[in-house]
Amino acid sequence: MRKQKIQAEPTLPIYLKFKDVTYKVILKGIRTNVEKEILNGITGSVNPGEVLALMGPSGSGKTTLLNLLGGRLNQPTAGGSVTYNDQPYSKSLKSKIGFVTQDDVLFPHLTVRETLTYAARLRLPKTLTKQQKEKRAVDVIYELGLDRCQDTMIGGSFVRGVSGGERKRVCIGNEIIINPSLLFLDEPTSGLDSTTALRIVQMLHDIAEAGKTVITTIHQPSSRLFHKFDKLILLGKGNLLYFGKASGAMEYFSSIGCSPLITMNPAEFLLDLANGNINDVSIPSELEDKVHTENSETETRNGKPSPADVQEYLVEAYETRVADQEKKKLMIPIPIDEELKAKVCSPKREWGASWWEQYSILFRRGLKERRHDYFSWLRVTQVASTATILGLLWWQSESTNPKGLQDQAGLLFFIAVFWGFFPVFTAIFTFPQERAMLSKERAADMYRLSAYFVARTTSDLPLDLLLPVLFLIIVYFMAGLRMDAGSFFLTMLTVFLCIVAAQGLGLAIGATLMDLKRATTLASVTVMTFMLAGGYFVKKVPIFISWIRYISFNYHTYKLLLKVQYEHITPNVNGMKIDGGLKEVSALVAMVFGYRLLAYISLRRMKLQTGA
Ligand SMILES: Nc1ncnc2c1ncn2[C@@H]1O[C@H](COP(=O)(O)OP(=O)(O)OP(=O)(O)O)[C@@H](O)[C@H]1O
Figure (cartoon, helix red, strand yellow):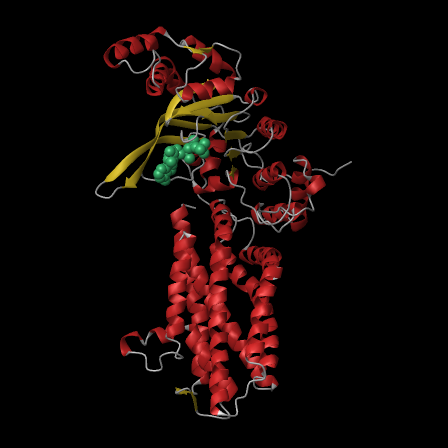
């Protein structure tokens, strides 16, 4: 017999009501800005124990409405009222809301069990012990039927992992682990076969039966699936075409004169109507009359009303027959006492773990996830083959004569450039996936940004060392650089500082520019400028751009490498004075912190942009 289940937070019954919800976006035009109405006066409600489905054609505003109801679109262009137990949205609700987004944002290299355990440890309240949190993750695994794949990696585009349905269930598990009172799901069944989809919707039904409020968008449900929903909202181009019991939808539409002429899946019929497609659908005389009057003027529509006419008719019919009645229903007070009502608006935000716990969980998770990136054969081969080619080109090079010295300095310059370029681009390319995860987890208040940032920086360090060590061992001995332990380790340290500084710059650029193309362009231009100002090609840099040298990690790395290799034999190489070792080290250390700080500020700003 399995032991008693761990209860996360007790379920708080939440009655969600929304009245005349509107939402607009301002589209920037060449001359003037254009306003686009996305939602237009949506009213409805959903109670604990019910599943509300949002249906409508693509682009009808389902996701926008879901985000608004979930408190994820606090824009000034949103209107109307949304209340939770008759109270407005407050930040404390975040710990009671689960939000499953349309895209499955998960770390591909973690197993199902690891994913849910980390989520449990970060999200469950501090009052539970580590063992209790881990037990809760195991309970959720069994609840969702994921026990057979609990040790399988999630997988992604390049890694084979769990199936689409299992992945979706992991995403749902990530949210139900906190026992949310209010659960939002954006298209939880898209891309799944009908049996798996039915299993997921049945699961939502069971979750609601346990006293939770569930709201889900759904694209094209089968008829079996459609009957699992308690309430339904049908949207068409941002307008409300129906709100009420899902089982009463067909009756309502037949009462306004629209019924299927052949046997049809109700969902298919409703979507056809919302699209204005009335093939195989009987239409009311008012709509037919409209066609006759209009056709006598234009003669264009083969005796059928246009989709816009159908829409207009459905919106009007709802407005005149049902809307007022539903708005009145919203005025009825909810059947819970004041104390429970007040619980949704406590101003305190509670973290599931202390700063140190957050840091240590994120550190371990970062190591586990990114070690696959670092140990990928592609990267190891890339670095090892570059090192071998360099070793062969500079095979046992001499530094005892001026010609040999000049050649060898070229190798040092290349090392400074390679380890300046490579980490910037690695950071830019790996960040988009992480950015999606960061936005999602921060929107759910899983951890502090500072804990994430410090964990990310420190978990990268041991991994950052491995590839340069491999690189330097190959190049150093093949090219015959200065043979003593001190010089070898100082060279290593210099390269390491350069990498950490470059990574900070990559992170900062990646977080500032959301678009990968623009980020890589800016990174190329920046690193190229740093490289050119690095003192190899132009010794006397014009005064007005000489400041670039001070922020160029390539320049300081190159100078330090020269100092480590040739200080004992010559005062300058290619006209570049060998001096100021400590100055260069300080500059590199300052850049390590400076670029990281820039990255942190960019991440903070990114947080504001996503509204998280
Ligand atoms: N920030 C925005 N800027 C411009 N247009 C937007 C914005 N947000 C939403 N839209 C537009 O609003 C409409 C509704 O979008 P939404 O994503 O809510 O639709 P949907 O019903 O969920 O569609 P789908 O089923 O395809 O996911 C779309 O036409 C979309 O292009």
